[in-house]
Image (cartoon, rainbow, N blue to C red; front, side):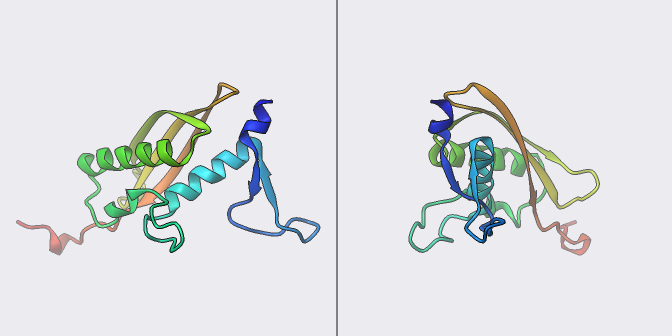
Length: 137
């Protein structure tokens, strides 16, 4: 019964399987791909479903600081609550990639409903860092 709750769907990104048919994802992989799709889609990007996606893209030009990290966490939590009813989001933590100043790592802890299966997914999000000459003195 719990696996029926998760379902099956087209793999993301869409690709062909070894038989030439559209590849399908199921179980935990289906949910992980769904989360990535939600986070990678900006609202308004899909003409037939303009409200779909996550407002995280509003922060591409924001500074990589604690305020932006907090706003991204709120946007991710809100989008996943609305668009992915098969999970319960436990935590969203946004941290800074020490090797890349323009990369924020979004760490999502969630539980698959119906199975109580705890999961974790890290989604890299890139902001466009300011040039040194753009920083006001």
